[in-house]
Image 1 (cartoon, rainbow, N blue to C red):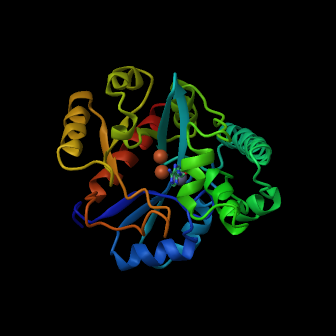
Image 2: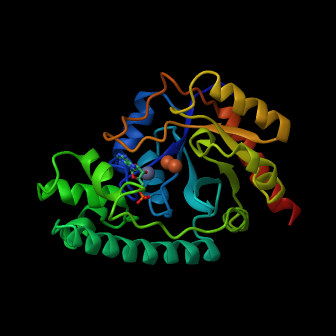
Length: 280
Ligand code: AMP
Ligand code: ZN
Ligand code: FE
Ligand code: FE
């Protein structure tokens, strides 16, 4: 076995704001001949086990993951956790709190939308979220379903985008708290799509706080950009990860025409996760 088999280490499912079911995700992974996929839903690990079950017998390895949000000033910092124990009690407690906060946030967004004249229904928002993490895309889908907007984008452009009248910030932790949670659950923390954050100056501090990896390959990292992050990874001794960040149909199915990530990343992540638990 060589290490250059392809993998996708950034995928969202119906358990957060993606529209890939576990079965659809695995079907796509098989079609692309991927050796491994990481399930990285926002604020939940509920999709990990269903994807594992769907992947049984296919040869696709499933890496348990999560994508958490931290804040620093106005910046929204996305942090991926890999090789976490999805049953870790502290992690699950934190995710339960996120779930509660997301519910309250959705209620507040619905209230504000009503104030600006859009009688969006909370039951529809909840229905679109299903069992998973409720987010702005579910609010957008409800608005669309009720024909209160013309297309999905309009929700963000006019109402729930960062400067919109119904935008409510998410519950977010300090980056160091997120690193602690991920490491506490036996995992490895990676800075997600660093180019969308545009705060490279924070990287040394994150490394000192326990971040061990960085997402080098991402559809929004064009040529030149990913090379830049590869150099930073080398400079700081960070594991290089990457993936399609697919949310299903909305952002395009997982596709590897642009993103080249190999099983070498998985090996490095597993080694880092394993090394720490041995050292405990
Ligand atoms: P939330 O985590 O609830 O704040 O929702 C964030 C999600 O909303 C992101 O993962 C995107 O998928 C989606 N999103 C954010 N901005 C836009 C936009 N302008 N157009 C479409 N989807 C967006
Ligand atoms: Zn998302
Ligand atoms: Fe993200
Ligand atoms: Fe993502």
